[in-house]
Picture 1 (tube, rainbow, N blue to C red):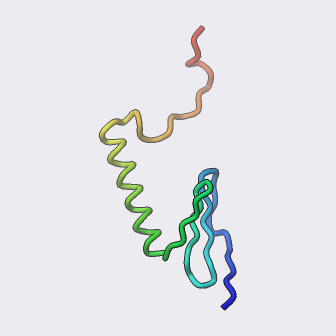
Picture 2: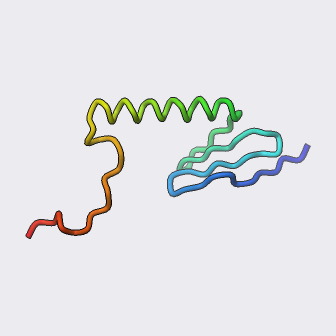
Picture 3: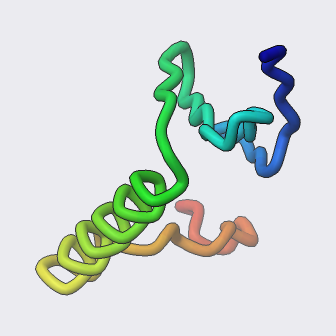
Length: 75
């Protein structure tokens, strides 16, 4: 069986390829993890839960801060 991949998602932090065999290749930096879609869904849920807990424990460490307009710079 010849394996072919296609990019199904990509942003500045990661790339997700789907192989013709159904596996996903999730790359973050120089690390690529090959996993079944169900495992990727479990990873998604775990990361989302972790981020929610981090934000609930310390709201200042949660969601990214909005872009500065420059008015927060010292005079």
